Image 1 (tube, protein in one colour):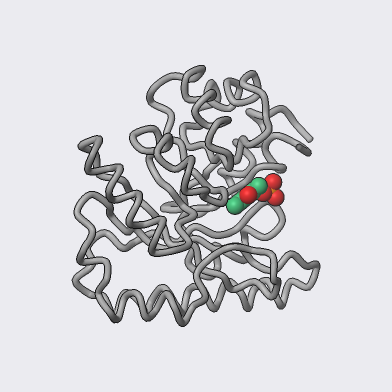
Image 2: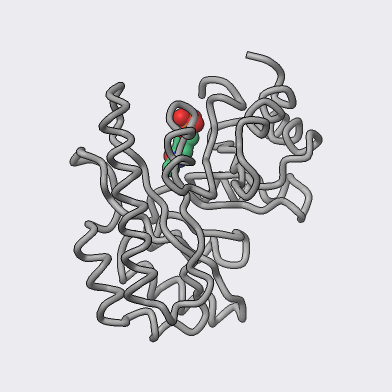
Length: 220
Ligand SMILES: *Cc1c(COP(=O)(O)O)cnc(C)c1O
């Protein structure tokens, strides 16, 4: 492991143009985030609301915070106006609340729909068929203060890279299906997938946001 600055430089050198790096800083101290910031990194990913809010107060205001964790509806309100992208929207209920709280605050919130493709019971996200149904039924037309920007996904947690690649390929397919179904949906242009151990495969399948924690900051 190099320094945080070296690790960021190395990660960036492996990303093609147009792919954004989100440095996943969950559970990392402010000093480490500051090191990344000083190296030029501006996008950071956090998975807990209280931790994210605390960190926004300790970091400069040009940091773009991405929320990537499971959303508890009773804590959701605290995120609105503080994050540049909520990546982990996994239900219509969460989306309705984001829209309502955003309207109340007079902001527009950008979100990704988290799609569940992993062969595991434990991960959150929309089952693909339900997500497709959501777009076919044009439910997104009800949103006034929320912009659906694309999809977020995690692959199955396995050493079997063929399985991981198949998961990413499925997300890519779903993304183009939705683009086709909801061709009126402006700004649906982001695919966030790929973590420290699998991001090159994600990029191969259309990811334009990768979320890298361990390879930048070390073990949590
Ligand atoms: C923790 C986390 C990551 C980063 O994982 P690493 O293996 O440390 O790179 C990416 N995405 C989500 C949703 C996470 O919770």
